[in-house]
Every structure is written in C-alpha cells, then in structure tokens.
Image (cartoon, rainbow, N blue to C red; front, side, top):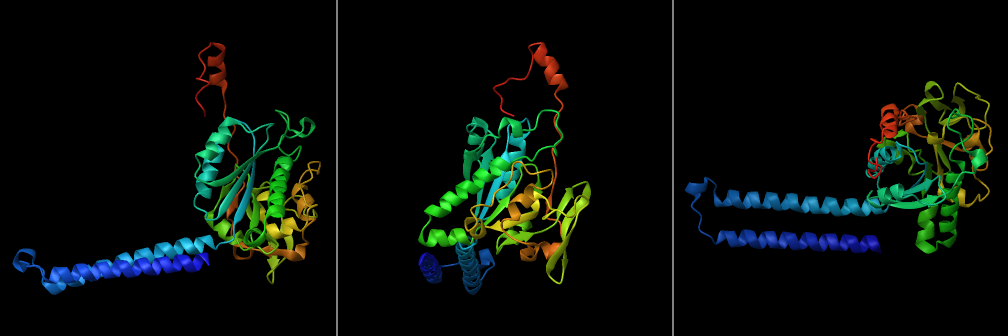
Length: 332
C-alpha cells in the first residue's frame, strides 16, 4: 500500500507540473515579443519551454522511483567490534564514509568496554547512519596483552556474539511486515580496519543462506578464496590449515538473518584455537555444499584485510615527561 501511495503522489505531482507548464506556455502566447532583440521565434520559445518541462518531469519521476526502489531493498546488518586505541576514531571514520554510500544498511557497533564511551557515542550520533550502539567487555583472561601477537587469541568474539544477541532479541519481538523484512535481511561482520568495495554490499544483499567471496591481503597471501567448480564451492585457496571446516577470513562471508534466527545456538567460540573462530560459527549453520559463491564466482577481490600501522608516540612521550604533551581535551 505504501508503494502505491507514493506512486500516486508522483503521478499527481507530475500532472500538476505539466499543467502549470502548459498554462505558462499559453500565457506567453499572449505576450508581445520583440523577436529581433532575442533572435528567437515564438515557436522556438515554446519548444524550449517544453524541453525544460520534460527534463523536470523526468528528474522528479527518477528521483521518486529511486526512493521507492531503495526502500524495497533487503536490509544489511553490519556488526563491527571496536576497542579504544589511538586510531579508533580514524578507522571508524573511514568505515562510516563507505557505509554512507550503501542503502538500507544498519550498523551495529559493539565496543569492547564496560560501558559506551563518549568518543564512540558522539561519533555515531554525528555519522548520519542508521546505527545501534552496543558494548560487551572481553574477559581479562581472553584479552590480548600489549606485546602479544595478534593471532594468539581470537579477537572480537564476545562483541560479535553481542551483536547476534541483539538481532535475535529484535527478531523475537518483530511481527507482521517487520518480521518478514528481518527474515529477508543479511548479516555481515565488518572489522573496523578493513577496506570494502561498495560492490561487495550489493553482492551480499540477496544471500539465501551463506554467501562467500575472496579476501585480499590476508593470511600472508595476495588473497584467500573459495575455489568454485561448476558454480559450487569445492575447496579453499589458502596457505594455512586448508583442512579447517571453513578456512576463510571473517570478511569473506555474509549470513542470512533468517538462518541466524532459526539457529539460536550459532555463535563465535571465544576459546576457539587460532584460525578456527569463523568455523566455530559457520559449522552450526551450513556445510560447504550450501555456500553461495559471489563476486563473479569468487574471481574478484572486493574486500581487503588492511591494517593501520600503530602510531609511534616517542616524541609525544618525551614531551609528556616535560609537561608539554598534547592537550588531552583534543579528541584524536
């Protein structure tokens, strides 16, 4: 009904603009015109007015229909774990600027914190995005220490599970059209330091169960990827432990929200051994035969596992010791 009403509004507005344009053109017929001064005949003036009117009508028609078509797109829920560090705001800023170009995207930002921080709260409020701000503190015994290698313990498991909890809670409360829309939605786990092509989100939007694609610059390789034969995933191109149930990166798959809601036990195992975090979640949902290869049958890289270099603060530390450090009230 909403689409019909909007279309009716478009056509009424279209008719009114046409009528006003015609009235204006007829009024001009009764006006004197010194065509010698303008170098344009009365017929040419009318033709120009009609051309301008047609352009205006097409613009209105395209604009309104575009709004209606975007409203009918399947929603994408993006879960992003984040934690306090010097580059946090920079990372979130870059990511948000990508998301602003993706229609029907709902961003679930989950802080690794005991409570929401002012930095992330203010940032999201000014982002212009549809978002939900959550927080979940990682237990101390599961948290990486300052000098630990990044692969030592799985990161972001608690935060991703918190995002899944919120989605399931929302799904349980939804009714009617809202429930139908949720079942058509897709869930993606986007870390705040990766780089994403806009095309990736349109590839994943119509996922039926679990869709997959290559990830660039990951695992010490140019890319890791599902290997596709006759339209089906048969194995994985990876340089480490290819016998894992699902040997791929977190950025390399999206999941139907319907599938998540119908499998309440599916979650990320915070105690999973190195490289098995993705498998700990996906093995509750699908087998390899169920995977849906995207990105031209996994021949295109549309997401990159980039990492921001950790800033070196030697000069800042030296100035701090002299009492000349940067103003702590300036948010970086």
